[in-house]
Image (cartoon, rainbow, N blue to C red):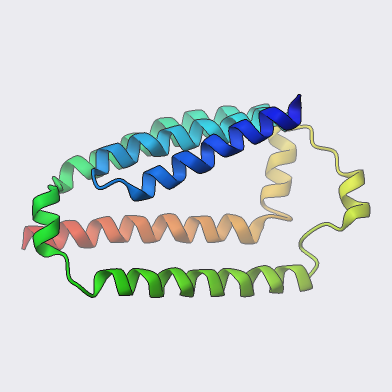
Length: 171
């Protein structure tokens, strides 16, 4: 039963994420992103990480989405205006950025695997996943420090992108 629930929640999270990046309306994208956050929280519940699931709903589906919606409202993006400002080079730049992201991510994962960051099968068998804040903090700033820092850089990039878009529009 847990495998079925895992597939259902994972599939809904994946479908919501794909719909979030393919919508032209930014508000619709944000709503699909909320659906992805809830699907991911369901995956955490199936994995018995209840604390992480609660934090996922409270922090991401709550606070982060409110922040995203405020940014969308402040930017006042209109699809006609976006079409006028769109450059024919944008799809090419988007594909190049995606390929670069995949290559850099693959290199980082290979380096992390070579450094022994990922647990092997014997270590995974002895892992105790209790979901307590103490265990999460120890893992987050121990084994998963690289992923934590990469996530913080991605959030910083999103914030800088929003500021640059807003500045360009105001001047």
